[in-house]
Amino acid sequence: MPSFFIDVDIAKAKTIDTDFYTQQKFYDEAKEKIFASSWQFIGDAGKTKNVGDAYPFLLLENYLNEPLLLTKDKQNEIHCLSNVCTHRGNLVVYEPCKLNQLKCRYHGRLFSLDGKFISMPEFKEVENFPSKDDDLHQLPLFNWGELLFTSLNTKHKSEIFFQEMMQRMEWFPVNELQLKPELSKDYYVDANWALYCENYLEGFHIPFVHAGLNQVLDFGEYTTEIFRYSNLQLGIGKKGDVCFDLPSSSPDYGKEVAAYYFWVFSEYDVQFLSMGIICKCCRAA
Ligand code: FES
View 1 (cartoon, rainbow, N blue to C red):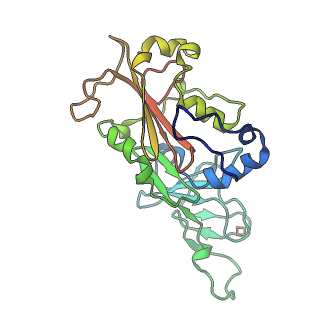
View 2: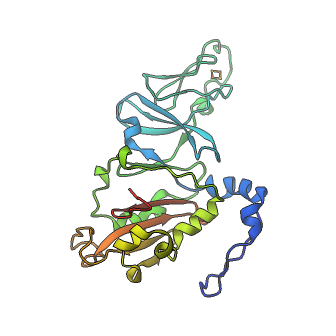
View 3: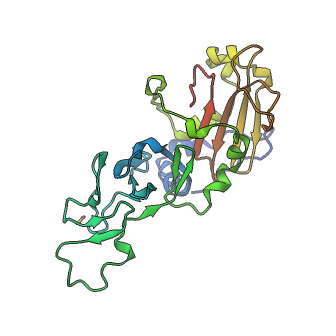
């Protein structure tokens, strides 16, 4: 991928070259160079609530499409595994279910819930078998409270990327977060992913596009803080509107904070997680 120059001085920076948004080769290259090497949100711990739960999914469906599997083993530990059998590449689990072991339906290879190879019919005479390569590939799993993240190919520890967000929100009961499907909405955005990132990362459009949000946020007090691997947009509520009841240990104590919008990225913008409580147009968890 060629380098697209962005001036670090915001007063001089311009939109990335049009080719980045329109050419298929850049879209494809971004899979490996940006998305595979970053931490991605993959759901909440409720997907594997009980011992034996197995939850198959595609990582970034319709883009990376990597078949992965969440399992909970007998020690109550959650694992993120490749859902591709180490024999001939068949999918191991097809739908969410409860299992004692993982059994590939193609030739019967058996794995434990943590992905370790157990047995394989008709393979008694095979030399140097089994080896570590016969285990299902285990991916790193990072959990912030109930929220789970993984990465196909990261070179960096998750704690480095998430540390500013975790420190800033230390007071927040992230373990108590619950998904309320009746309050959730999915939007299909027919645009290059980078355009969506750019939209998220600037607040100038709020007065023009989000009338409801603009009513409750004090746009003049909206701030952006930039960290090494993340940034924070802080929404201050208008007088008397709903805001967080912050403890004195919070660095924001004394402010009428109505929304925290964090964006976590690697060397390139890739993964975001937002959290807030009042955004009516762009509802956040
Ligand atoms: S592909 Fe899984 S056992 Fe053969």
